[in-house]
Length: 263
Length: 161
Ligand SMILES: Cc1cc2nc3c(=O)[nH]c(=O)nc-3n(C[C@H](O)[C@H](O)[C@H](O)COP(=O)(O)OP(=O)(O)OC[C@H]3O[C@@H](n4cnc5c(N)ncnc54)[C@H](O)[C@@H]3O)c2cc1C
Ligand code: FES
Ligand code: FES
Image (cartoon, rainbow over all chains, first blue to last red; front, side, top):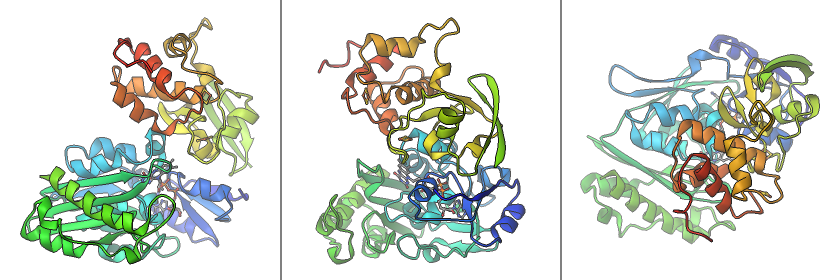
């Protein structure tokens, strides 16, 4: 890893100021960034740790019932503190990586990174969540812009994520056992005004909404409602862990399982 | 260079480190606590698991400066005050939970974190908790047995393999 300056501010305002410096980068839990620095795939001149900022941490219910999670909240904290408020989200958080990864990794870091196989992007997109930064609110539908690409500007910090809580929801992750990420993961969320289905791990464009399934499930929320739908393998990821056709097939299987489990 | 101070196994320590110094390397190279092993250095294998403020973390995936002011626990702090093996370590010995021993410090630290959270885990819970701890020797079976035994549970229920 190349050397860098290190700063650990205690407020969002100080962090934003520190990130204004040339080639400065935010450090969340470091579970993705530190391995990236070791491989010299990133070489920031300055790392600005977000771990000392109390206002970035925690889970709370807003006046309208939506769940707000601070951008610096660890996966372990979400697994514990969202369990009774949004069980499907807490369950997703409790199966990210392993316990040691969950004790450090944060929701803000996961979303900013937008790994095509990461779990949180599926929950955020399926819930129609809002990503709040130090300067604006970004709708989930506008936030994810393809593999490892988001709407975030340089130095912009995810301060919290606001999740409308669905009537029923479930996440099904087909584990890639070596990386412990999703080979394919599907998050299904049923709201009073319709169903949203988001798929991670499968597409070369990163997380996406499976709109045909959303329409079918909004009319009839049963696994059978999507049994005849097919996903086009052409835009899917194909690698040694699974072909394009295999992933396209898994999208259907995981969606049906998620609907069955959401009930 | 930055000065970091922390408590390691109950003792106050401090040292000058670079921003990029990993907690694993601060423990091993600056404090000579080489019981914390570095297997992969990529966050995958769990050999480097230590406790930071009571929670398990992979010390190869955390900067030493991030542990400034923290309470750190390593394998060197696990034995009883008289130097005898603690319950988990003793159970690893009795149930052959190690062969080459390379993964063992991380396994013991993860097991300690698990039993603090969940004093009577099921076999399935133990296996799931150890997902980030890789062992290339034992096949895991005797590790799971050792943790069952350390939690005071009957190991006969785990099918022999
Ligand atoms: C062994 C292992 C297994 C894993 N398994 C899974 C899995 O199953 N599913 C899954 O989804 N993920 C998995 N991960 C990834 C993990 O969830 C990471 O914690 C996460 O992707 C990055 O979060 P972080 O807080 O560690 O961010 P960091 O690694 O610190 O940062 C990642 C990126 O986000 C930026 N960033 C960090 N915080 C913010 C913020 N608040 N605002 C704006 N930008 C920010 C950083 O500048 C950097 O570019 C795994 C990781 C490991 C090591
Ligand atoms: S050495 Fe840290 S996880 Fe392998
Ligand atoms: S005992 Fe050799 S790696 Fe686990």
